[in-house]
Image (tube, one colour):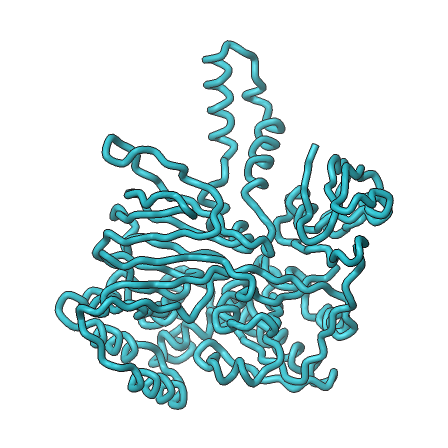
Length: 492
């Protein structure tokens, strides 16, 4: 038996014996009740959110919300969605080949091939994947042009506020990482982001519209978008507010992708902070960042110059300019060090805790790092069944691989929740419980989380891409607001 109350719609369903992840019509669904008592209508509609169907059928990537609403006691389909952009910004990923060329700009292709071969990498395979990506990118551009849509291609260093404001919609050409980067620069709720996986063979593309389809399918997919044959999915995001002493550089950030190009360990990013002011550290980091356009550099300089000088003893509060689509991680820069902090869940009391860090995620992120932190393995389930069998003197199918696998799947799938659900899940990595730090709930859901740092080389990382200083005394408040949701699309 499975029950689900559909908050946006109207009905309460039980017993779904047969569900397809791409189907919302269930002939054998039994309606228990409905909000306004019109059980006959609900039975005729038999609507099941695709987010639930996907989770039950072990495909956590197909999420949807049936477009229903209450009106005069009757559920109606919302009007057909419209997607008619005049300008589309295409954010292209940096291929591994391009990455290596940037990293080793002083060598030619032959030398690069030799260098990669020493590391065990296949130069020709990297070149082939580079070509596949750019062939797909060319297809996207040409199909948009044929449909009368103006497009512009940028990579991460040209993806700024000006480029975002120019476009009516943003398409990403890459994988989930490119999609996350695109989402990080968009704060408004009415600018859609559409992901296109340009490496269907080598990338999963969970957030992409066309996960595993080659470029030959893009034309039909684009036509479906222009015809309104899709549904909007508003993915919830986490808003982060930081507060702390001005002298500790509250709000200073480091782009971790830029660090990769500079071949500098991310754990050294604040290493100079004890010997120089935070502003100097930030300027040094900017100087070390890879080549950016002159306009972008001058724009950043202008923004910095407008900041008023602050007293080092002043307590400041800033709302971070990025929203987390997947997760927020708080912990020590070196994973081998213990993370020390205080945490408050919703209206609970602030408690001290030591662990390997804490991760807070959205429904979108519940299939990612959060899922892998908490998932059960078949080895663990098998050993637990054996212990229970011995202690309770009952016969359990400890060696039945199918039973063990089913138990794992049942537990793991309940970790996943819908991307449009307005709440966060949190999980504590490797919590330390002893006489000083008593056990608390290591995993759960919350509407608001407050974390106060007790560390000296700690960081707060948004979607694995941007890192913020989070040292002793700094405080982070995390919440999910409806107006911060990201507009994305899914095919019905």
